[in-house]
Image 1: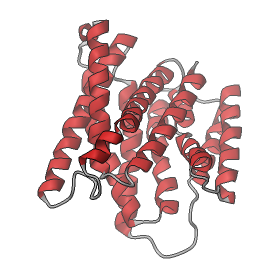
Image 2: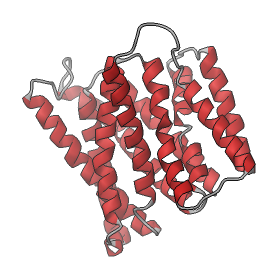
Image 3: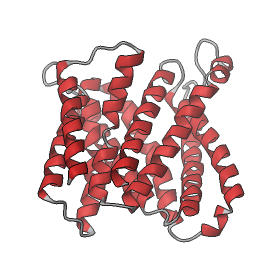
Image 4: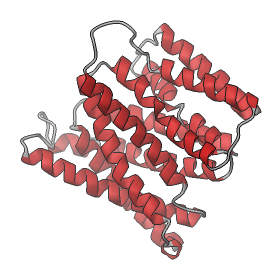
Amino acid sequence: MTALFALATALLWGLADFGGGLLTRRTPALTVVVVSQSIAVAVLGVIVVATGAWSATGPQLWYAVAAGVVGPVAMLAFYKALALGPMGVVSPLGSIGVAVPVGVGIVVGERPGLIQLAGIAVAVAGIVLAGGPELRGAAVQRRAIALTLVAAVGFGAVMALIAEASTSITGLFLALFVQRVTNVGVGGTALYVSVRRGARALPEEGGFQVIRAALPALAFVGLADVAANGTYSIAAQNGPVTVAAVLASLYPVITAIAARGVLKERLRAVQAAGAGLALIGTVLLAAG
């Protein structure tokens, strides 16, 4: 069950990242985050009311609040890093955030077997290579590296926090709702500040019409991200966090495959090799 839900997380996160990447080509990234997460809040609000999840209120929801604060900060740092440095450096470096939940799992007493350790090593190597690392070329700005590391730690922290935010399905609905409300609050504040500083909230061409036309895609991105957090939480609660975190972090492979299938982008040799290693690592983890 852990492997199944963790792989579902990778699929959902990978597709959400792909969709978000497409949307940010025409729409400011913060606007994409705020609108997509607002849609998720509305849907989750209905689910929380319908299931009576309010009864699951407890101190564990502070983990959801923390995840809601850290998530937008990490995403903003990641987008800024992508603007400063080549994607071939930023993307694979950002994937090292998996070390955070894996480290948490080891600290709390999880001890992966030899096969699982081998699977973790192979899968992480595959994740990094799937990002198409650039080993040659112009020097990367130190600020881009610093921002990428901030984003990586943030993404990993969200995975660790959301896994602790609930102990039941109804509690999970409430935790995800709280996380998304916090996301919108933090992201909306950042958007307001950026607009006050002269940035645009709407696309230069088309304005609000572009946002309205993109609502189905924005809804998909927001809901896929929410679903991914939910499936990851279930995976982490029903099996080793070390296994769940690594399998869930295969999402860059999904994003690369989606780009190949939809945008006809050619996978570089290093990316194809990374996808293959990720698959081998997945098999080893599942077998272990």
